[in-house]
Image (cartoon, rainbow, N blue to C red; front, side):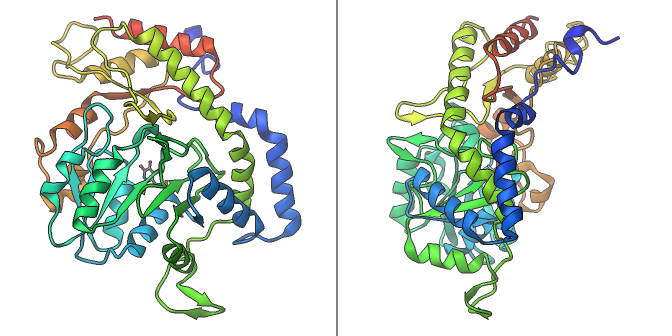
Length: 393
Ligand SMILES: Cc1ncc(COP(=O)(O)O)c(C=O)c1O
């Protein structure tokens, strides 16, 4: 039997796009209507305007709309000179697209470990991985928080290697007064629907202040064309469509408020959860502004043995907490249960358990709980209460 707390009406999801649409539906409908009336669907005025607005918001001179965050990475890496046989250093704890964009170019991802406190690339791991074939470093700003870019940029500059920022999850995040995406050679954004700035389908963008790179990327996204039906190299069909651009322009007007709401919810979580023993709350280092794409806890430890409910000996405590939260009508998600060096896709690269211990531990311990702008204070408090109960042994 379903108890009232478990009915779908009471379930607190990870994200509630319907609640968002209830607030902005009229604006979205008007914007979509405008595109339908114009009958211009690919590479038009909406996309041009969005590029300018995103470049301005990112603190870069240029922005180039593309079809997805994955293709933003592929085109960006290619434009930075990554070719088959090259090596690209990427963190092991990220979404698979960070690695597969490298593989799609015939290059080899070389996995680096992360810092335990931020879940981001550990600058200290990079130097030992650089070889004569290293062509780029990808710094991922995971969960809404900037990677520690200064030391990463310093090592890269020393070796003459470009840094590409995978900013799919952290639009608007700050690092010592700069915006994520604006610090490396280029930054890649995803507008996947669940992102802080999400389209109504797939879409992405590359931001850069390098004029030559920007021109090259504009050509690469459109079959390598540099003139009318004149291609100078093999490119992609990776163009941003006008319907997505129009939707994104509406949403961009709300992004600062939505980010502020996420940050307020995070502060509330921080204040009501800080005394809970046995968990680690997300924490932004000094000088970093977290935009809380996710609010991700660390829950170390394993079940001691049978008898504590239905938990199995050795089962990660984070899995047990996740089940208990679900019983209380609270969604939670494990991002990411398998680090990239242990993905079946990369078995041929020879990664083994124990190679990248901090990433592997993060895969066992990380649990993300609901955070989205439309949450009410009561919902945040209910999640916190359910978590408190779920952590009791
Ligand atoms: C860290 C990271 N990189 C790359 C991507 C790929 O973006 P997309 O899904 O738009 O292709 C995503 C998002 O899904 C992501 O989270």
